[in-house]
Length: 133
Image 1 (cartoon, one colour):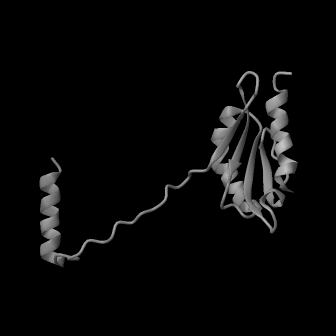
Image 2: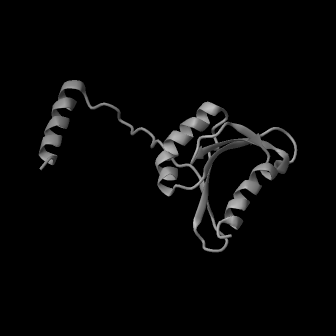
Image 3: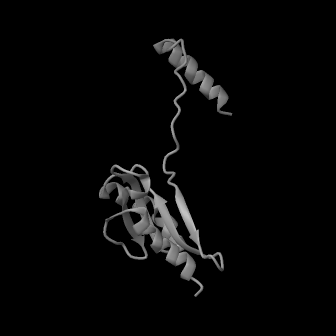
């Protein structure tokens, strides 16, 4: 149905403006937007979801963490479990000693914290191990 219209329009444009480029433009490869890694943490006993940890790998400041929080709002609000947004690790030294910006976003919005894995992981582990106790 649209093919005759398209061909007529193409013919009219080519006769008026010329044929255009003789070579095709290279295909533009782009990464999918809006995909953020999320770790779901489950209770060790009942396998019920107890927390979400969102990894905002490109969020290097509070504004970018807040942007990620807005983008992910429907996801963590629907699950209704504690949720954190974590930025990339920074600093020098061994990876376990590097800090990352951590922002709790659900059920209450928290303050920005700079934590090492050994400081943050016990919070998540407590949710997973104490859920059914």
